[in-house]
Length: 392
View 1 (cartoon, rainbow, N blue to C red):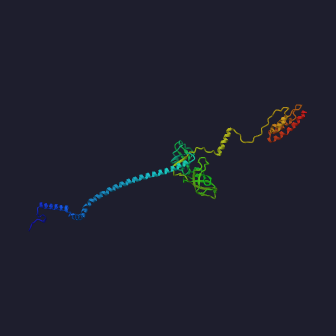
View 2: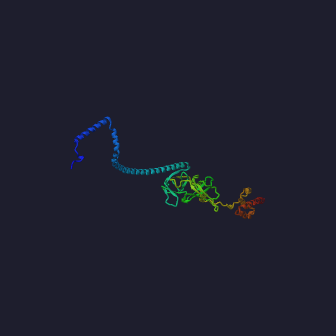
View 3: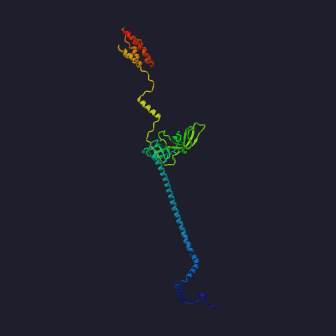
């Protein structure tokens, strides 16, 4: 039986010889490749053959690197999305503020334009909040008594009348809107000139024309303006537009519903009309004023004036017949009657010739004045004819 080592362990040439041979071969190949470039094709073929093996060897490393990049990119993307959302919210808020300021600037421009066309002085104001009573239609403005606001002043915007100042405080004032149930405003149809009174209808936001005749000249689309008859609202301010006209055959009046033209529930900036002109007094007020003045002056009432009573007059002298005869037709009946009764010259016996006529002459003076004329003129010729006889 033969015991020999396997071929792997067979001893050949020494290791140093092998290293030297292979080193010389490598150097020779390097020199040939550097000088003549003969191994370029061999390298390309080797790289092509070994490339799949190379990629398979690098796959675990690339998988680990890709996994790390994936998770890092997810966190970065989440952070970026959060930042973008925050920026979007900020930009949306800024855009809303810009839109609000644009709308406010447009409204202020319209108010300034309307202010320039108003014939009276007006003051800019802003709505602070609504009134606390939910059953009324009122708002509170940022202008008060310190700014010259008074009760009854109209409040308007660029489109028309909004309401009227009903309460005044030092720094604020309360305005009752046109649509309030307790608010009324005298209006006039711009097309036909028909006058009426518009009343608010509460939270419906509409106005109502009451006590309108069924055949009144009002049509859908007519514009109502202030008539100025109340002395508070300037004439010609736009109020509302007719949107519905109902003629009730059974009733004595029709029904007219109007839509306010002003931005009663939209705009925040308003104009307070600072009208300093005193209101024209009403006829009853003027009558009461004149009556009080007359009572202060103690003027009597307009009544028929009675005839004044006759006063006894002294007898005229003896040479006064001609004067008495001329005074009789002068138009003073009461004065002429007295000389006719008592102005005769006494006879020689010392008794007047016409003494019994004195009561008859005094009676007309105390009675109706119309009867004194003939009674005063009748005795005058008798006295003139009787006097010469007594003198003869």
